[in-house]
Image (tube, rainbow, N blue to C red):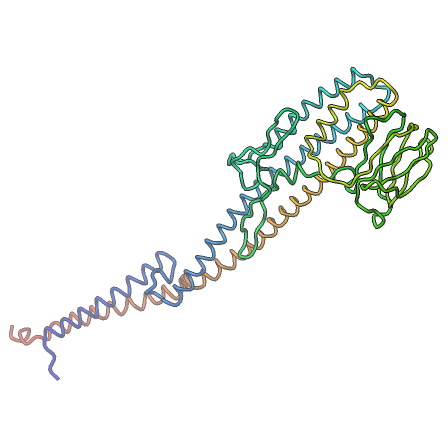
Length: 399
């Protein structure tokens, strides 16, 4: 088969250019430190690398979400700690004000101080995060959750809470709604609450109450009505049906349906006390009710008994509020721990993904340098052989 001179030159040039392109590709790999720089380098590996990079980007977004949740939960924990400290201070002042040796002027001074603490409570409930979003407004993070109208505080947020995805199948709630934290505190001891009629004329007052056997408690609104001045009483259920009778002695207790009501003083004829199923009361109403009670000036013995009953109820409600906040803080702590655990898992996964990406994409320098040297020798050989072959023309022998 005859090979033309032009074909010989063309083939030689093509082969040298191919060698140069291969050498250039290897040199580029060494310069970048990567074996796969374009899908053409290794199509199968390129697909796997893109999948791994997508997983890494997704993990980074999960990390950003976790950081956002961690920031809000940390701010919420600080706010809850401040509320707990504030309520404890209010409770201490309430105990002081309930002391029989404290005069009316001193109680009014305590009430004035508590009005300031009520303002502090409002400020904490309306706190914002670093993005100027309200912590306790649920989904409505741009809406101020709490506002005061006279003696009442209204909640304008919603009862939901945002969830942020921190893993492929894992979400965490980044806050609590203000309704859950401040507005829905179980009354009394969480099972029932006590009170005294404003029409009572005796010296009897309720000190505290407790549950002795929860299994025997039947939720209802009961009344304890005294039938004489010697302590005889009857207990009526919410429908007015008598369910028990007994005789109370000064400083004793009244037990029924698995609950115990401790009292002091002696009620008069027809004096009435209530034992009602626990509902809810917001923290603002509790503090405001305490202030109102402290500002009152009980003159008669019956008014003093009513005062001490109201004070005991408010102090118990403050303790219930603190217990409720401890439960909320425990939930916040659990969520923060979940974020820590998720971060550790995410970091382990990140290292694994980066290692797998490196195995597919990064260059084996020893192999690449050896290959480049071989390619360089091949190119030099092709160039040297071409210089000899290019002189085989007939005209070279006719000179």
